[in-house]
Length: 312
Ligand code: ADP
Image (cartoon, rainbow, N blue to C red; front, top):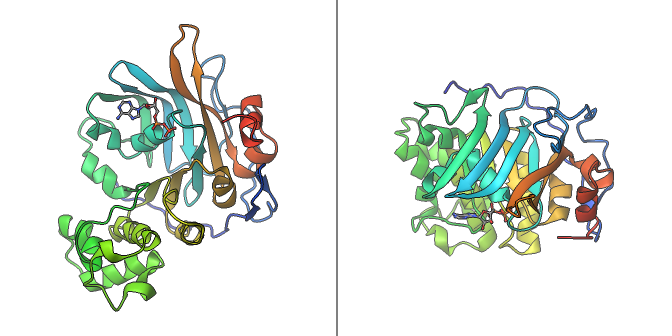
């Protein structure tokens, strides 16, 4: 894998959205202006409506399906991931959002019986190509999970962990401070770096996990419902942090919370589960576009039904 060239990050922030049953975006002036083109490719007669972000995507899924043994959990997903943007994946439970998220850094490799077809590229390179080391992929494309999972180690050692594993030769103290600052946690923990990471509150633990992820300076951060176990104040902190992180990183987030997707993301992918003509249930991407459009003027009636709360 070559080094990512992710400089020149645009710094616009996602607009805020009012909480309401129907998620509506109140301001779009700070959002990237995306001119909706025709669907990127017609993979099949019923291809998802996909509008491309501006500029080359940092990652791209092309016709990706994921199987758990014989079960096709999610079918034919084609989706770009815009650089220095937040891409959200929403949809009802079980439609394959986490499964697709895991394809982006080969986490599905760790699940016995899981198989991925199609192509997933990072900086234009197929991350499933023979000879690509999944450990190197995960160094560039880090992950934060639903439940904060600090190691039973000190705060310092949690953040230093990935650096030590990678044989980091620089000034460890500086990198630990930088990562904790980047995760908006430094001020709260700088006087107790030797305390256990497990002694922190849930919200602090999740920011510690984000610090651990960014310490190795990845390019992309995958977040699987990172705030679903947190209270509203801790959730707001994580969302603020995400807005700061996209100055340097690209974020893909799975969330069951539509308002959260509307508040933080630039682009949203809506998935649902369907039954095919052989009565087999599978997950699929229905629509992908800039978040403002997806929530206010979706192309597909299924997206509209979901975002207006009529199903799901
Ligand atoms: P979502 O994130 O949208 O809730 P998931 O990606 O978790 O959906 O799951 C999609 C489908 O794949 C579901 O039917 C789920 O039961 C199945 N699935 C997820 N993980 C596994 C696994 N490790 N083994 C077998 N089936 C799985």
